[in-house]
Image 1 (cartoon, rainbow, N blue to C red):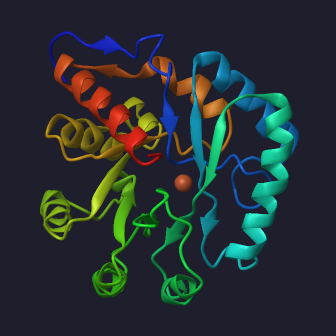
Image 2: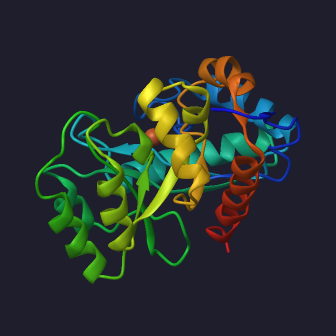
Amino acid sequence: MFGFRHKLPEDFFQGAFDVHCHLLPGVDDGFETAEQSLQALKKLEERGVKKMILTPHFMKDYPDNNRAIISAEFEAFKAQAAEACKIEFRLGGEYMLDAGFMERSKEGFLSLDKAGTYVLCETSYLMYEPGITEMLYDVMCDGIIPVIAHPERYEYANRNNYLRWRDKRYKFQLNLLSLAGAYGDPAFVKSHTMLKEGMYEYVGSDMHGLSNFKRFLPEIKLSTKEMDQLLVLKENNKKLFE
Ligand SMILES: [Fe+2]
């Protein structure tokens, strides 16, 4: 990484819409209590965040997470949050591409957009799970467009994988803190390369707690081109709320 690097501007979150976070408390490995979530929301509101899509995990580690249960949790939390802040919320989900994915698809995905088209998906960090392409093909036949969460974090994936996924019309969502090395060096390098090359569509916090954010946000350093690209992603996020 050479040349002049910008820190993330202080006002980066002014008017920002987050499309990936684990602020719905007590349902996954994100925030544990409503109190912690509300505290984080106040900090995010101070920084200027306007809207958030809450995206709890749907995966075999959390077998109780189905659409009905999570929707009920969301409604209860939204009512509490409305008393603490003015941030607007939508409920989405982060769907693991595992053996239960097709079963989950039958109850209907909690999508990122109102129209039900864009669905946040993740896969294993460590190894290529066979059958992913076929699963995604099946749901795409029903009009779904997969948004692949933090592609930079998949250790086995290389440039050719990303290009193939992009050819299949999957969209990519950058984890903001990947740019600061929060997920290790390979994800750090890939996130900068992919950002520079314009491969991402959206940017999300993937916030599971406040501590990582406080620690890594000041570490983000971007070239002018990367900064410009990041601002494009920030605008793209807004389109999911239209
Ligand atoms: Fe996530």
